[in-house]
Image 1: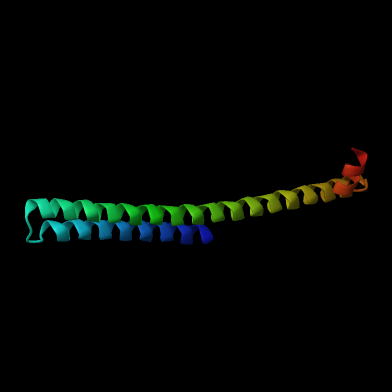
Image 2: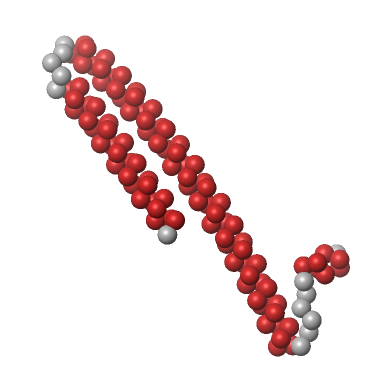
Length: 108
């Protein structure tokens, strides 16, 4: 569920940035100014749009990194739970005492 939220956030952010950039450019193109002033305004607005895009990308990248860390932690927890389950099942089937990580470290 958290993955969908991050994906929706990214979609909304990219849509907003695209709309904002389009609005800037269209507004400048229809402004009653000389060609030189219009080109100057377009460059300024393009630079602002670029800055907004970089800020948005940075935020999305940070959120993606946080999400990846959470997924990694959950995967590690799942793997550990599976190992414990298999060890318990093995000991029940064979009648052996389970090996615990503490015992394995002492044997090394």
